[in-house]
Length: 286
Length: 289
Ligand code: SF4
Ligand code: SF4
Ligand code: SF4
Ligand code: SF4
Image (cartoon, rainbow over all chains, first blue to last red; front, top):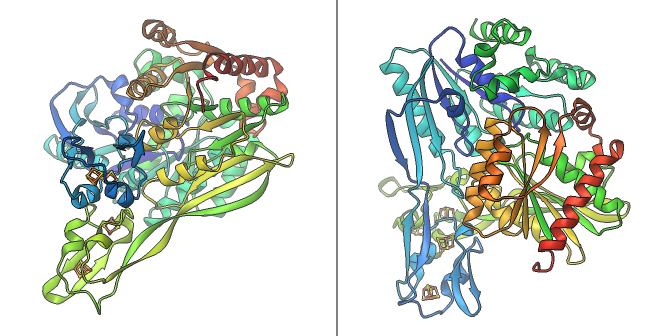
């Protein structure tokens, strides 16, 4: 069973909650799908068992020995990546989308395309199972393909090790990486918080999830920061046929546990918040 | 001068800082503009009593194939690096998969039979809002299901009028293209982080990303007092200025959650932020464009 934990925006405590789920009783495979800002490996310190290269598109480069500065490439580039800078045709690497068009039309064949091969996917073991995570090299396009690769690997690892539960810690936002994270999963959990932005983002995220014919479960984290808004979230969810599966209080012990390299379940197993997380998990799994 | 406010991940207080800096500047009589570049989850406007003054759509062009002219030669498919053109010549099927199309125009160039025209497809909007009559809030908003917010972010930043003295760019999270695109147009980058291992890890990745771009940066630690001292240690080792620390205070979180500008309730924080911005302008403002 694949369970995706997402949040619309970062900082709702999604990763801490996914991590807590991952250290309850059952052995799990944890897949960190937030390839743009992978964090969970910090808590789980997984062993290094395999490493794969992920090719994140291409970038165009000009060979100035061949370029005659005609500007044809600049006229064709739709990403505003090629300009004359001090009268010299120049590609701004950060704007290049890697479409190949300039390399195809340059009359002197001065442009070549190089692969972005600095992104990686790792897998290994941690104290409660297996872990797979990706690291997108800075400035690359997060197209969701690396997320797909992470998920494939997680499934393979789960199968090889007879593990049934895969927890996907999702990326923020509503773009491709999120869509790649939830496509075809069994359950989706949305972690939100009672702030105006939390509410807006949650609503946008619910829309995306519903596009995939999935019914998300909601968790309101830090509900006591704004109880009235938590109530609004409850009401909105109810009116939209969604279930708020639990709410968690703001608890500085969450931060303490992280500082000590542990999940809240490991750090304070008998705390109120740990018990609540346990309860939420059993509801999801039932 | 353009100042980007960024954080490796959302939720460290980036929007708290950017909205409060903006508010403080405005109240101080500075011509400031806030651009919410977090196009996948724009939230800054909700903090202000602002009036929508204009909306402009951001489009890209996707191909439309005229099957009466198409010879099924397959050249467009060959030119498309995103697999957005599906073609089966034997049975004369050709189709554009719009969700995969990046609007690069390569297929149009490829077609020798004049079979491709283009149509506009919306990617999102740039909205301009007025505060006290001044159009000083700009929001980039990506449509659901669109692949990349980059072109919307670019369009939003282009909207800023040249009269603005200080432009605050509320950056998207992460270190991939949307973040890079936003900070690329900034003169200075403020990273907002929290003093935890997750915060440090995200900060480190952001700083590494910025290193290749030659931009000055500094760090604001939010929720100081929670967590540990590793972030401070890291900043010292790297020689990155610690701009200020906002103490952890449950009240801040409560005001924020209600959509209130914390600075109006806690003038001390307004002073702190103004001091930060003034120092940045003093040190880096002249070299700006
Ligand atoms: S099209 Fe080729 S030759 Fe012309 S400016 Fe571009 S790189 Fe140089
Ligand atoms: S590969 Fe495409 S996006 Fe990159 S510079 Fe060439 S035309 Fe522009
Ligand atoms: S515009 Fe570019 S991405 Fe879109 S179909 Fe044509 S070649 Fe492919
Ligand atoms: S390049 Fe033109 S003629 Fe050839 S398959 Fe594409 S649309 Fe048809």
